[in-house]
Image 1 (cartoon, helix red, strand yellow):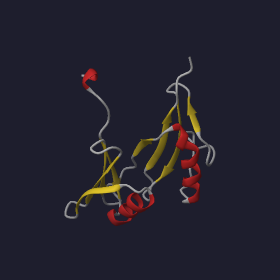
Image 2 (tube, rainbow, N blue to C red):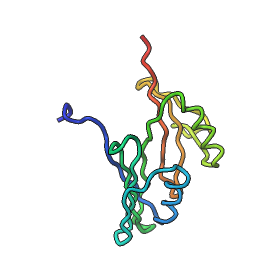
Image 3 (tube, rainbow, N blue to C red):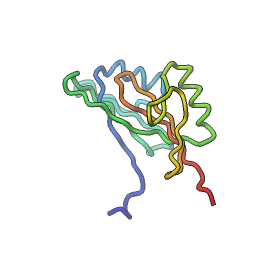
Image 4 (cartoon, rainbow, N blue to C red):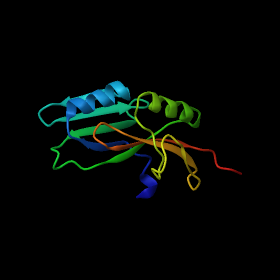
Amino acid sequence: MQQWIEGLFETHLEVTNLERARAFYENTLGLKLAYLEQKRRIAFYTFGKPQTYMLGVWEKGAQEWKRGHFAFRISPERMLKVLEHLKSLDLNPRNFLEDDSGQLYVFPWLPAVSVYFADVDGNSLEFLAMLPESP
């Protein structure tokens, strides 16, 4: 089956307040709302090239909510700019080890560099840039 998989299309996060989450994902991150269903308390966002990626945001009660994580892939050229942008939005960027604030983290085994931050519910979000492999 692995040879059939071409990429990851969709992921979902749980939030405790749909309106507050929508304000974050639409206004802070600038994602485009693709579908909203108030009755089921869900919102879907698309980003990237058309029909490339989708994020589902599902409202859950505080007792049901579970912290989630996913990474947005960005270009290496944008990594330093996104780090400063996260700081300007007071999103408290951190690294993979969570042992400092605002430092990029290098994953030599990928190779990639990333920075983490949280949404309004505490879900762990990440910007990750793949790096060219050394010869």
